[in-house]
Length: 117
Image (cartoon, rainbow, N blue to C red; front, side, top):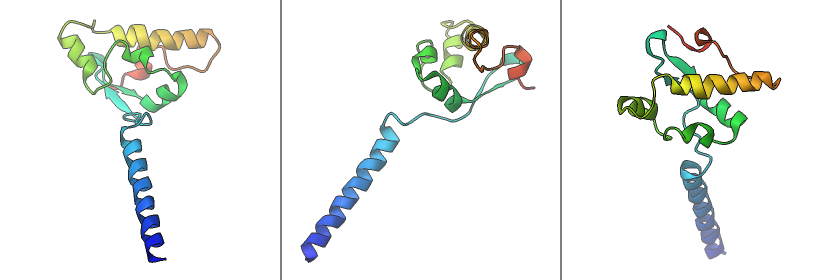
């Protein structure tokens, strides 16, 4: 009887450890919920990361252009591999405009609607 209890305890611990490891390293790791992007002289841009993940479903829509790591956009700009306003003007605004044109609820399209001073 005592051995059965010990085995159940060990099995329970293994399940808990496996679940914790999966949460920390699995596909559910969505990164930061909100990210503050450097918006240059117009002011920073608060970016609701999880909202975009939930709506877009495909991370490669954005991350085909830049890596999934903090500071990757600024790093690419500094190395001359990404034009300064490309992400905001080509990815963000263009996607929002397409959504509005299709009659879908979409994000802002004017600069002042995103940039904060």
